[in-house]
Length: 398
Ligand SMILES: *[C@@H]1O[C@H](CO)[C@@H](O)[C@H](O)[C@H]1NC(C)=O
Ligand SMILES: *[C@@H]1O[C@H](CO)[C@@H](O)[C@H](O)[C@H]1NC(C)=O
Ligand SMILES: *[C@@H]1O[C@H](CO)[C@@H](O)[C@H](O)[C@H]1NC(C)=O
Image 1 (tube, rainbow, N blue to C red):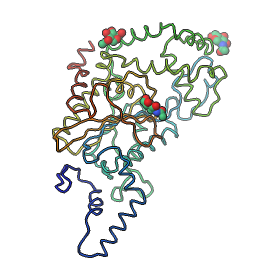
Image 2 (cartoon, rainbow, N blue to C red):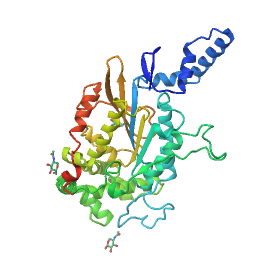
Image 3 (tube, rainbow, N blue to C red):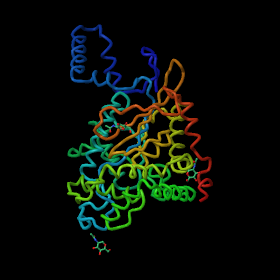
Image 4 (cartoon, rainbow, N blue to C red):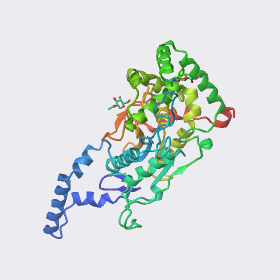
């Protein structure tokens, strides 16, 4: 981080600085140069550079840190059901695997963020700038890789093979039974029994009885839980995406009637504050440290954290940040947290955005229900601290 006296702001050393300076100063040495520089500036404006920077919804001068959690791309089905006409369908890459369309989605998302943060994320990849964590599931790791391929295409210096315009970038992950951060699958006893209690309670809701009957009859298996509906919904969606023709009976219930119980099933993992502490607490603790380090200038190089997870992880963070609406995160949906610094007021604040899918151009800014707008760093930390267990293992009674 360096202080720019002309602009009265802190800024990251960036290759774009030269370009920006060139836009403002007129070299005295020669008018020819001035004309060329001006011409280039106008040309780059015409080509979209100025338009792009104007449409960026943040004041790039205040941005200090970006944290993105995204869902993996389109996948093949994980489950089947008794009467499934595609039970024996041969998925070339196996069940639950990222499809080529899914690879492309995350590549597209990486490109969107590359353009969106063109003034903030350095064009060249440096290990010190960015840290990537993924769920250990292959589809999440692979999604992270294609995202990074688009975010950091190698510069000329970084090209290491004449035929591969790609560079390796590390993605870190913990095995499933240890991952309390991204996939949030590390076992927690108290969470498990509370979740089961809540699931039983919701399943007994009479408003689902008719749907459960219909699905049980047509799938030829017991469908008496929103979790069953969740699995079936995801399976039908994946089959449909793959161009398979779903059975006639699905038309009455899929996707519309199945959507609410499906979204409820995703939400139950982080339904109330107790469940959120146990499920989302550890990633919130990590987010807190990341924000603190930037605020305290303990790690001013690291400006980007990426998390590659699942729909339930996006929903869990969404709920922990105060939203109660049910959410269906599409493939590649992402939540973005930005840390800003208002130098003149000597204060930091936090912004939250949601990008429904990989097609959206500009993420939608969300107002966090527990916070004013702008949401101060202090208030944000206070909120997440209320969801961070001091001793997770003890609270889980593991
Ligand atoms: C439903 O299951 C029963 C017993 O498991 C089987 O005999 C029947 O053929 C199945 N029907 C369909 C439509 O799959
Ligand atoms: C969350 O739900 C569980 C299961 O119903 C319950 O035991 C727990 O007390 C609830 N927590 C809060 C804060 O409501
Ligand atoms: C995107 O998600 C938000 C939040 O759930 C929702 O309000 C909005 O309608 C969604 N937009 C689209 C195009 O799905």
